[in-house]
Length: 448
Ligand code: GLU
Image (tube, rainbow, N blue to C red; front, side, top):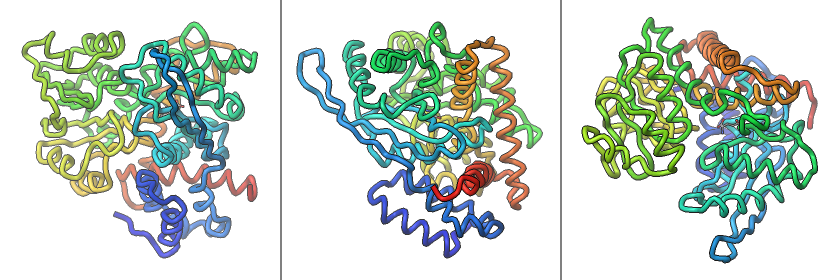
């Protein structure tokens, strides 16, 4: 593991002091800073310009009250966030997360990661993230709509096709983007397609956006295995989660010849040794918005493990696609012991620092989230491109672009890892490649 030099330690200490109590944000910053020692040694202007200190400080942070009426007529109050982190490469871009665990530190870690991820895509997008501590679980469609409308009634003034372009994340999918877009359109009296991505296909959305994060992650794993003269074909895979990212990771991994034997939700794990029945998972999660336990009611041979730990299931490829810090050091050791050779992160920062260390020291091909899950936001940028030209592309054409982008990200990360003397260290490769482009743009733009 690379060590901090004195300069980086000083910067990190300052980040800790200025952002007390924001553990996930500290973790995300630490991981990036750990990669940057050799870069600072080569580029003194980054030190003089305090580029790292500036990157760690969001350009703008918005926190607002979101009042709404539930179905009983009771007043509910949630907190809304939008952290506009860095706009040196384009308008702020990043999803909205609706989950009870959301707080400023979570949004800042996600926004910070998004800066480098978006840079890696090669598309003209800056980094941002937003959301709310609103819990959509058990809420009616009307409640969701009223919440989204109230949320947008404040947020709209900060958005714009050239300013800030949100999308979905945990708890925000096509339905929520629809309600948010409707309210934006109503307040502004503008049909500004490019202000949100993840839209419905009949009103400005892009084909492949729904599938993009999962497909992209599968492509990234395929590319990592290729460097080792190996492939996904015939591999046993485990995918945590069962939301959008997990579903389309399973779909593409299966298409590439792998067998996904397990997935999960926050209540438990489904194990199906014959390979998961994806149509059933789609019906349970996408249509009925139900729980993954229902899978075992339809397939008697499958096993539901309430409260189980998915990482104890032996596999060759692990695809954490649920949430941050879902895979710790102990889990990583169990995976390695059971023969895991590759990890592709569909979720954002799903592996703890100790887990990452275990994978790297064991020679596992480890694809960190900011590289492996960049396909989602990359396809959002393709959606923006189509909106700007009032065009819409075919599924095949769009998917080809996604595949090219993911192969490009993999190659850039790999080459950077080689250049810096750590071939195959995708953490270092992704951090340095993502950082360089942002830092160069910041130097060019002067002290702002
Ligand atoms: N929330 C997704 C991510 O973590 C997508 C963001 C977007 O499409 O703007 O990258």
